[in-house]
Image (cartoon, rainbow, N blue to C red; front, side, top):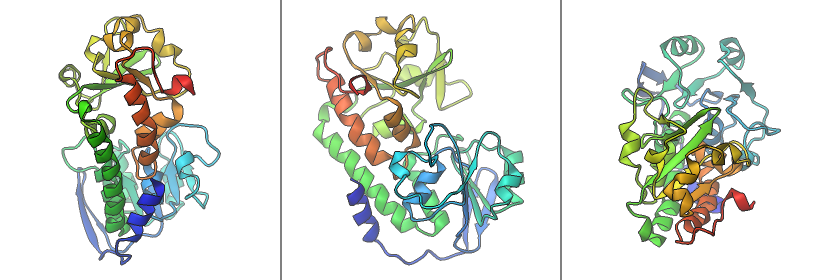
Length: 317
């Protein structure tokens, strides 16, 4: 799949987009006068799309995962420099010291105060007006990064290749159309699930799956994630139950009191993605998605094959 994306990228024009460009977003309007060379991303998944478009960022934000080069395995080959690593709360002095031409903040959760501080350093691109901080679909994220970098055509070519991959799997599995999927997680003592506004269910929708109405009905404030009582996970009891996990130890999920009573569990319609596939799925980038999709499909096939004894997920790794 990586070769397919590379071929698609080479097929588009290598001419840089015309600058200046203007981007509207929730905090106002940003004008980028010239094609940026020194790029900072304060997005949690920010390095991937920049690297996929042939640019080495001067600073990237650490999300999670303990890797030598900070970026995850699917990005190791394309990271050839040593960018500044932003950890914890944003350190504006640290960012300013990288002398950026632009700061990308489309999956960052920055507020108006942070935007103002960052704008004193360089032009900042944030999420569009009316969109949640972590609700921008994967393809729109990639296309926005492409526009900022003057590589919109290259970004579109890679998006098209991934959509072709997704459409191919959807065509191969017409029985998936309309089935519900719940993408859940346990964080400390909180158990919850991603709503239809999150990038993970949005990606599953491209293979035919839908989010249960009970999940979106529970939205109260934070639109991309809702929590449920550990004693009653019935709103998450979908045709397909997927767990994203930060490790390959799933005991924190299997010990949930109501877990074993869920129909999806009793009927074997459950998938544990494991740490690396969870990361690839969650980063939802031009680099990570080909890896995630190819890994997830056999897991889904086994979960929905009608045999509760078969599975092909991280439990067999």
